[in-house]
Image (cartoon, rainbow, N blue to C red; front, side):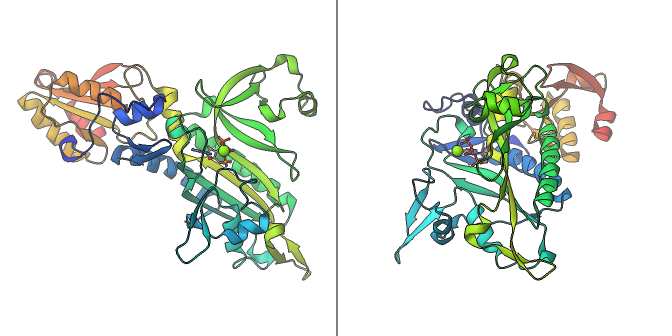
Length: 409
Ligand code: ATP
Ligand code: MG
């Protein structure tokens, strides 16, 4: 992309009410635009990051045999009434709206009820199971505090996966597969070494659920971890009873703040029972379907990564999700000609700063935007048939031959 061809601009200042680092930096760097507290637009660069995160998740889930759908964001109250969750006493963050012909609709805070309800049409026999269905979809939650940038949106993007099984063993098997897939996803997103699977309360249907917690100073959650971080627990389950159950003792635990980037639950019959999701087994008996659900906050993960790696110059994207690989600057007449040539070979990977601005301003924007590699071709580097590459993460620079640049990269 050429910077002269896009409407996005880096901004000197973020909105005054944007107190979160991720929100301020992403706004200044031209990734997002704030509509109101907890509600953001994703601009071309921001959308690319979101799409890159989605691609990684999609690859890992498709490898498990999951099928992607896209469910409606406007929801029928009926299935929610069947589980008792239409009540604001049960879900206190509902956005509800009136229909002109009478009655109410909900704006999706999550999708267990409509998903189970939909699958009643398609699941009838043991031959239809197991089944794994997921989507990327905007959720709406009337969050009390929406001051953390895109870490806590009132409208936000979630990946939600639901699994359906004939037995508890099969649910356990798939749950373990998702745990491994989540490990791979967070590693590929560049936060594998600071994201831990933490024990959380499982409710009446299962002893524990699990949260994926990224250690982060501005994280809203408090978690506890042992020496080698092999046991991490959230606040709800950090007590003597659970520690004993896990074979750990309290003295050795430390407290830190973290952001919950995902969570997974064995739901068993929690929704399939009240909604009547049943199947006929091999001996022609009617049975209730076992269920699991697996959430991952796509937009929150983007905010977490922005917070985690940012430095005093701006954003620093991991290669795997950066909107572009290269930030290209041509200096001088020959340098600009060569830059044009390089750009034409790599239009999809290169953010080309072809604006009429001083190199210093361009370099500052390259840093603010956090593009992994800055490529500078100037009359000076061309004198040696070379270009200069600077890595955003380390600040290290090196030279490469122009021929090599055109071919290899
Ligand atoms: P939290 O405790 O942070 O409110 P939650 O327990 O309500 O999270 P879930 O309903 O399980 O979260 O949603 C699944 C995932 O969606 C979470 O793990 C998180 O990554 C993300 N998420 C939840 N609420 C928000 C929000 N308001 N904005 C952005 N992402 C969110
Ligand atoms: Mg919540």
